[in-house]
Amino acid sequence: MVKNYMEIVVDNILKKILPDYSNLCKCEKCCDDIKAIALNNLKPIYVVTNAGNLYAKVNELEIQFSTDIVKELVKAIDIVSKNPHHNS
Image (cartoon, rainbow, N blue to C red; front, side, top):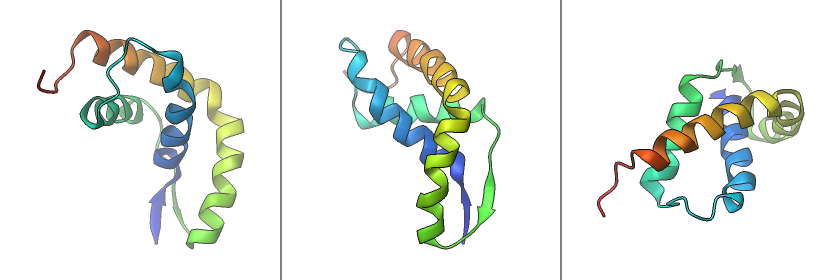
């Protein structure tokens, strides 16, 4: 199976920082937009692995890349909060 580890790490970190943004819409569309914007600004890390290995590696990546990922997520949150694309 080919998987982009960065997608999983971004998803995990976003779940951790979303509660800090009380005025942010957290609907599925807005969260997907935030992830997409952040992922477009982060280097993908494609690996071939089985599911068990995948989750073991995620923890390593979160520690190694968390600062860059949080930075991109904060930028993406700012963009989406000012320009939500969901229906009101």
